[in-house]
Length: 459
Image (cartoon, rainbow, N blue to C red; front, side, top):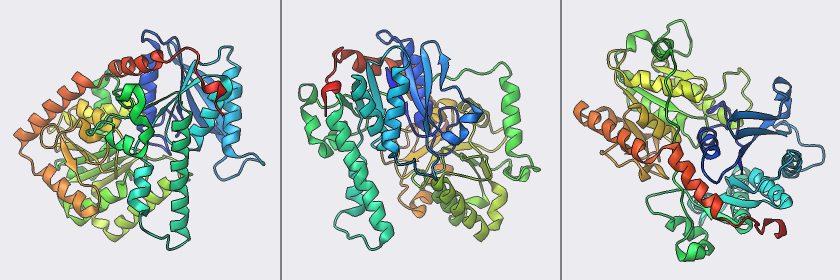
């Protein structure tokens, strides 16, 4: 089977457009390859053609039965010569998969975008069955942002056009797919069916299946203690511009990890932390973004600029804010465990997810598994596994003021209550969200489809 991961690179989550999906698919691909009924897994990734010289091999083994296959893409700031980006991606996908000597049985795409449409078209040409993971967005986004309103300027018109194109992409993918699946949520698939009523009749009227996602078990390194110590020292290294003031080491610490993007709202978190005065009694560590001086991704540039503006307005907050470039997933999880081992090494650390919404939230599950108290957005999939004040805190992230109130609540919790929350959070992850359980759930969807799909005959 083939799974697509077209947003950034798997091995650098948090940089550019890479995020939790890459972490999920890296672990899921490994686990699927050892799951009954799945012979081999290929994960499609993309790479800017300008960077191919650094790593020219397109096919790389990740583990037994799991490979990544790189699809070259045109430089972001240049159009392809007369070929629409989607057409070029379809051509590359078809060519490299057909050249492997064995064509895929099925292709699983996620996200309603041009890349998924391109891969879906390649699947049709190859005669592979297509699975699409649908979410209430972007239909929900269009309803929330544009219902009853007229675009007032060119910027709003362009935003509407882009949102409507995502609706179009989602509708086409739902129509083309041999099977559509959802993401688990508190309300089941009710909201998904509201936007895609044709899905109500699938599986004999049960609606789409929602296989559970999960996280890979953390395996400590041989020199784990030294790595944890080094990561903590790096956070408070006075000589580094991205480090925290060593004098603030005893203060409570807030940690957030992920790609820098307006939807992830790191700039809103910084604003909430400063305007509420929390910067006077806590520190904030934002892990994510490129280590390069020249940032290519426009969304990342936007967030960086917003945070820089806030620090310019409030220079007294600079020494208690650390902007740390994206780390490999194993290193992030090591840091989380080092912080969770406090307060002997620092003030108590907490994990915060300030996103406008999260469809699932792999990073939150990893923080729960590490032993950090977590607070995450109440919009999207996080409430499926976080119960407010039971194993975490649910946040209103609709404004910096609402977010600040949630952060205050988190930091004011009695330590005994926090300890109980952490124990329940770890138990939740370990009982329900292992990557092997996720692989079994997805494999049951993949293997129940007929061997010969209808995708090759679709138009």
